[in-house]
Image (cartoon, rainbow, N blue to C red; front, side, top):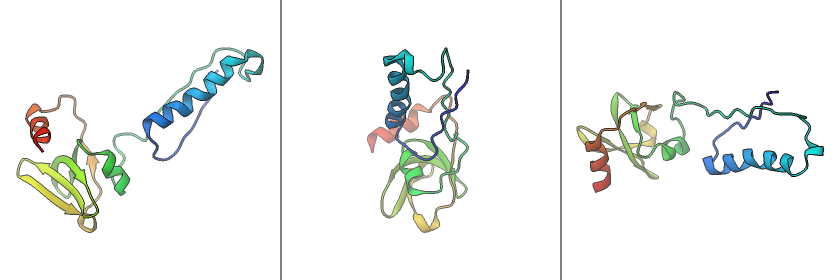
Length: 122
């Protein structure tokens, strides 16, 4: 039996995992109260990497990620009240919230060590 459990919105992964685990733990405590009467599958998904970065909280979660925005590809170094700090091959720049268009997270299967070293140096 498959039972969908939906959680819509942005939540911390730790909180979400706890919320998902709690019902299963409660069912295991008293099998007589198990409404599913047998094995079942719990599927967990996320909004996906292709969801555009449009809100400040999206950008805050993308710190350290490679993104494309306003025709520039770079790594989000930080966010602030002013906007985001973006590190690209042309240097580091701040893009203000009013000028910031929707961003797209770039999928990385093999992070470039040089970019990571630059991030570590600050």
